[in-house]
Image 1 (cartoon, one colour):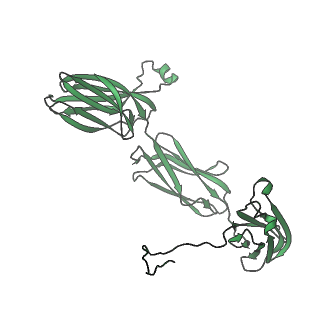
Image 2 (cartoon, helix red, strand yellow):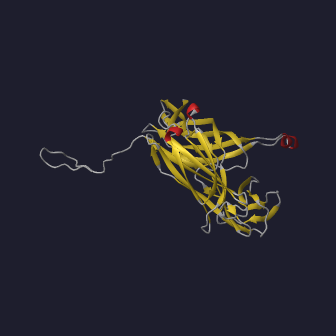
Image 3 (cartoon, helix red, strand yellow):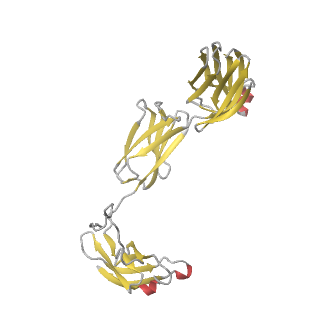
Length: 370
């Protein structure tokens, strides 16, 4: 009689086996047990004359006992049932089969457990106890809002979903309390004993016309008193009065003498913007090859700029892109708006691509290539 380990799929298994005059058998159990999940036990009897048998499985884990609990009750039992007593009948003869068992859930955190196997198989009495790891049931609560950014007076809609275990079982237990706090940590909305009978909760709240701007937080307390949160933001969004655009080529050849680009700024109603424009042109080079040029201009509407490739060192430094950044300060208000663009530096003037060609070539017959 002995024990050993083997790999089946990606799960580490513990095997109990026996070979003797009365016959031979093998019992395989997982090396770990997930609370609230399922455990598979495989049994092999390699004897055609083996009598029928019966095996009983049970498992008990040990939870942490705090000092205060131990002080109040010195005889407190730390044992927690992780595998209810389960009996498997083993038919007579040569057999090879597997059975699934359901493990218990626990509100306590467990590190390991003792699994006991008791009974008779292949005419042999067995009584094994094996320590196995315990995978505590993983619970995830998801809080999802319909968007992240809200404006004053809008309705914040959100939903809550809790699932657990490797099979993602949906929880239908009520949430003791759900609440929302403002950026100043003031509780502005609250729901108690939230019904979760459908497994998915939908809640909403309407913001006042002049709310506190900043990041708000939604809090959800689960039945085990754990808490999950998510954030959303409230701010008064003002449409930009003007925009800045850069009209530049997609690429330039490294051996060209230079290239040009145009910066334009217009109000949302179409009129040109006047102000001070600062344009920074960079070759994105490394160390000594890095070059940047800044040009400051009095601006109105649009302005075109010329750049000499040698100034950007596109050839001697093997530059592959040039960046352009425009910063416009509006005249009279000081409002700033920026825009950026990237221009590829290519070293291949012409490129060819085959889109079709005949599969076969024959002497003195036409051949098509596009």
